Image 1 (tube, rainbow, N blue to C red):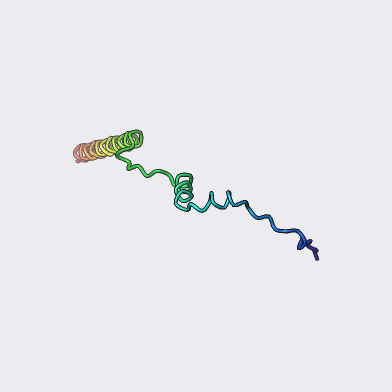
Image 2 (cartoon, helix red, strand yellow):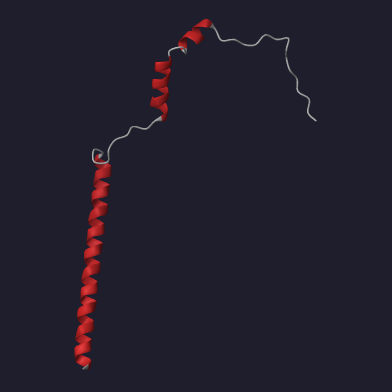
Length: 87
């Protein structure tokens, strides 16, 4: 079992009055904390780069869906043509 050394004879370290007064202003401390921790919330439509990325993704999705529709229409027309030839 470990033995721990407890210094009871030494006086505990207490911060100075100036340091205590510095941290008594809770609103400033809270503001600094929020500034450091929280990210700014900018809507996507106001962020120009993100808006362009979303626009490009939407355009690519539309183009892919149109190409898929064209291919399926071509396959349908080919299958009807082959059915007519076989009869």
